[in-house]
Image (cartoon, rainbow, N blue to C red; front, side):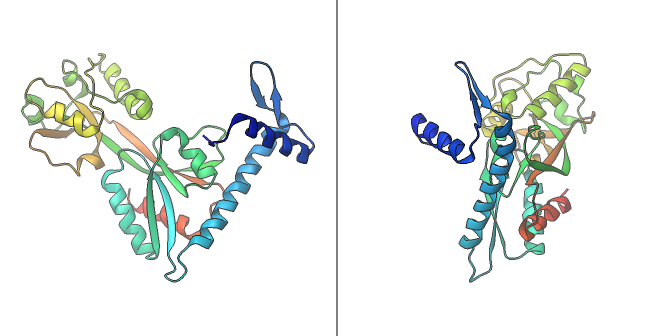
Length: 271
């Protein structure tokens, strides 16, 4: 991850330990772990690195136009909420420029902690040891995506139980565990385990497979995302049951910059 050879890393760590006059790692033949001193040092080191990064960005700002750049980590399912948030931010802070960054779910918290991102969206709470705050933004219901020719597409709402005999095309759990667990729990409560068909490598491919006239299948989307899609081959219907996902924003614990405060306010207005 650092693009540095292991011997060089070991030398730098030992140099730091000599400077601090204390071991940071307990090195055993089969494992390496932080010492108590290392545990205490780690969050402080992250704070220092984040402060250095913020200072660097302050120098890099376009002072001639007074622009404030906010790097925002994105996740799936933001849909039209993201459009509203960006428009709200423009009204609150016209000189703000948002740089949207697609970031894997497992690295969003660390990116915010180290200052690589000012904030990041998530559907899952951060790790317990993450030095970030997690702010609720909005609740988004899930909708079912069906072939437009399927009889269930004629209904205003679809019950989960009605889908027991229709194969499900859903992304692997590692891609969005909160969404996948929500769907499978709803199916279990309805008394069945869904039959699975392989999804596409992208959502567009999955929706194309569902919209084909060969065999019926279904998937779920965030309602805010479905509102951006128009397709005569597909029908998007709300569930009769309540399937809702919470969208949250990860921010640094020492947040206080005007840009970040404006971003949080814009997000809450978008719910």
